Length: 251
Image 1 (cartoon, rainbow, N blue to C red):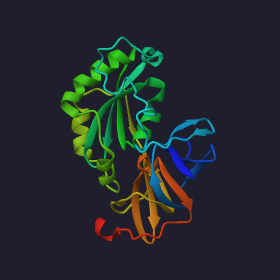
Image 2: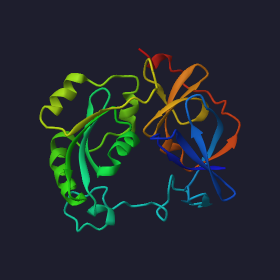
Image 3: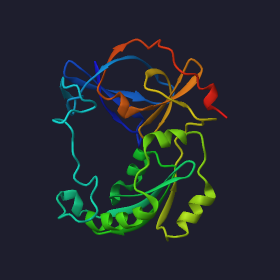
């Protein structure tokens, strides 16, 4: 068995995709669910097409050069010729806040705005502008990014688990703009402190925030970047390896 993908929690619970003998199944990660997998070697996750999986033995993970999807818009600054059909759709420019005080600007197709924010695990957000296409949106994003930045890395998001957004800092930022709408997201984690960052697939699911899965294992709480699981071979039965206790991370 191999973990070949994941789905962030949006309308449905988060999930990992597990392939076995060319068939992909979805393993839900709803609060209270039990995971019991031992992580083994890691290599390219291959190709998932619906419920079908084509394996790849190349060592690079989660995806080798052959199977890496290079999204042309990833570093676009609005100097493109609208290469994708989706570039011509209406876009939204937004700000996202991650506890306690990390902020970023971003763009997405308008109809995906709330979904995109939940995929990222944003705690707060503000819809700033609606524009005709992705090129205009990227131009605005690039301008705002010189002051705010356009990405927040997963380790930073994990460091903020259990914390609250700095209300004063967020209010000061929004005062510089005139948002169309603001959002306040609750992922139901109800943490009393920061979990330990780990890579494991054994424990009771506490919940998920973006691509971060929170597990309880032997009385401690752990935060797992789901992307770090992709490409891992797994076997049934929980891992019994020693893990750092979360006691020192709380407070």
